[in-house]
Image (tube, rainbow, N blue to C red; front, side, top):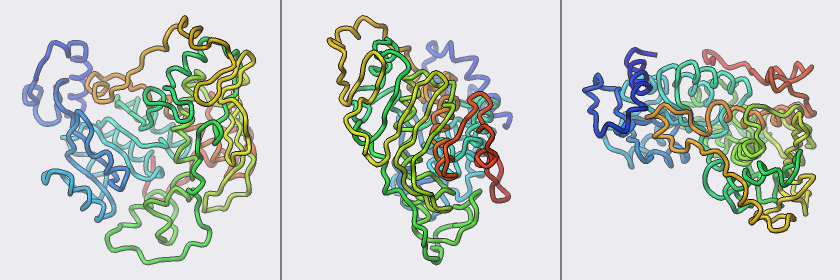
Length: 422
């Protein structure tokens, strides 16, 4: 981390409590470029300006000053909606060294998330990362370490634990959390996530096992797109909008939607600081390259709580949450008489830090961060590991490794194609 970023962070930490006393503090008063007054707009850079990245070029309270992509066509399209002074890069390593950048937004395929997030933290940047947080459990550990060692503020871009109605439940997660905390449903609980409780696993994100070898488009730096992933001949279906169907880059519908669906479950079950002790799978044998479908995945925690993922929609007429004292169904319907009236007597869940821009200015940990985001991503990656190996697995939640399974543990820290490391 350079001295300028060190000074900026130290100032923000010391001034956070006194921020309300300031109206406007010019950057030059604080030492020039790279310094930020708590009342100023933050500057932002976006890595990966395909469809997802372009959707986040503008964010309230920030100003985009740089973008990066390995596809020249993406860069050209993105620049159509940005000021001419915005800097363009084809290599993210040049972008993250810009002293004028406060926040790095990572909107690449997941096989790049870990490296880029860790390097951005080391470069003194705060980070907004798309989901899934990382493609492997080991990369999640490295990101957590880098963020915390370098004092960065990290946000994972899924939001259901703190705002918006939660899919088929049709209420915010805060209300579900309040019910679970009330213990009216009893304990332990079983949560079923599938089509009949309001969740679609998007099995159209499957890969193809007979990809044709095609010519790399002139505008695409395919070698850089692959980055740490093993070399595979170029095929249109392997990159951009259909990359999720291949193990090297993501994990199909589970990789795409897993943290959207499972992070809120982790939150309302109070599991932000632990992982399940086992994952059981019911699925066809997976192809070595192309992600396939699955029928059922079951996680079990040490206290007996379970999360069941229904892949093929065969689990019908079940509650979303099943407890020994009560049940909660889709649409926040329950078998508990006068539920709303009873729930009003219980305290609201603890308030969360949900404004990322303010969290950066005040140096406060965001509600969905490198700690709990890593744990909910571990839910996804535990299942993907079991699917790739074709067997159920036991997991040590403290050591964060699989028990007596060398092959599974090799998938925690997968080798990267040189020169890339994390």
